Image (cartoon, helix red, strand yellow):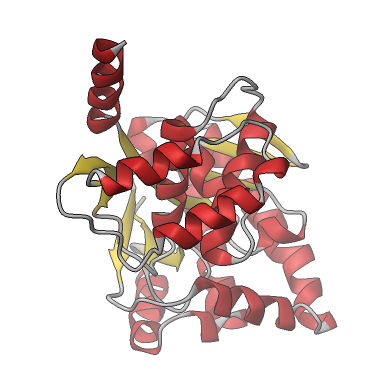
Length: 284
């Protein structure tokens, strides 16, 4: 039993939980549109032992939250083991930027679920719901997409309420690049801002009739590795966000955004809620 325990700790120390990148579907996914997300290659977290670095997370409050919501989980969590490990110096060691929309809390939630969950029901929807409940501690509300991508370490296509594993060409994903605005932000602020804008009929019509179809077509082109079509659709989405969502783009990036569109090179789009964090660049 002791050997099994240390083997388990070794496995968890070795496993990493990646950040997530939403290629397409930020905001519009919440209004019936499609989404495409994949694990990030540059940022991740893993369990480590040493001086605790919880970046402001109150472990006792988190544990209390998990216990209060224990009846809502499909797969139970061993909260006492979580607290015991924390006392023994275990912590989630991550280089995923906080406040960037790259899934820092999602990776942490996935790591908690993987290490302390008694996962008997491996239905994807059930696990996503469990991890959404964990991540809700950090955000107040979570779709579960970020932790699911991190936990499974694979791309997912979200359409019509269904979750489908996706296969993406390495050649194609190499055309995407994260651009650091160096501006941390609170995603909830911009999610709320978008919701308020949707109360305007003109804006809502543009989302439903222009952006959502463009996103669906861009996802289709990505899955089919149609790079010519994808470049045109990325341009369309970038232009739409500049015209209809300029307040979501950091002011210092507006001119660069415009320049990329006019020069027809390296188009930019939001990579998350907006306001800062990462932007997503596509070079066709």
